[in-house]
Length: 220
Image (tube, rainbow, N blue to C red; front, side):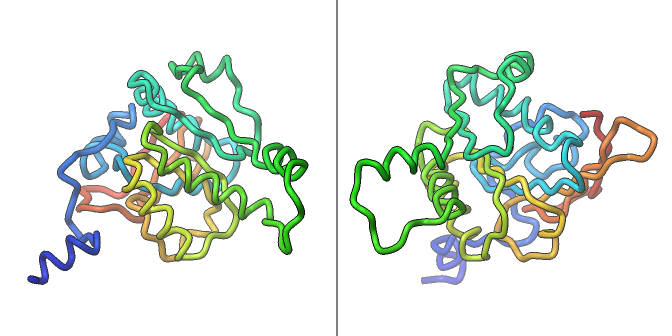
């Protein structure tokens, strides 16, 4: 077996290498022009790190989610911190009939009533992670979104492999405190507000492929 064959079998990637499948348009021309492949790596795991809540991390995903919904693919939200606003999603072009919100705690409570206690009950974080991993492997899922706390490198690797197995876009919304953590994600972005403006700076922390520039400004 040659080195090239070994690397392909291990699903490794090298700096400067971009998937031949291209990207899923973000819906923002400046961001598409900046990202290798012309958009979100799809399938692939991406991380969006926002310097503070409410600056547009979710709005950054809405055009792509709308496009996936029009393909009749499922858009799965795992334990979102706030209940998604249906009128706002519909106004953004999302197919509400293709949106699935998973309330892990409610599902766990219903299941607990139907089974005998086990020696160890899973924590809420473990249940959420399991649900997100299964959503990524669901073949009809276009994208799955998750707002985790701390994730170990091995857990991130499992999510990356789940995206590849299911052909889905996995999105992790994380704290900027995670920026220094090693991650197998195909793309990592840091969002920061622009002082005195309604725009945000989108900075690429990591990507597959070469970049002409590492940041752009968007109105979200």
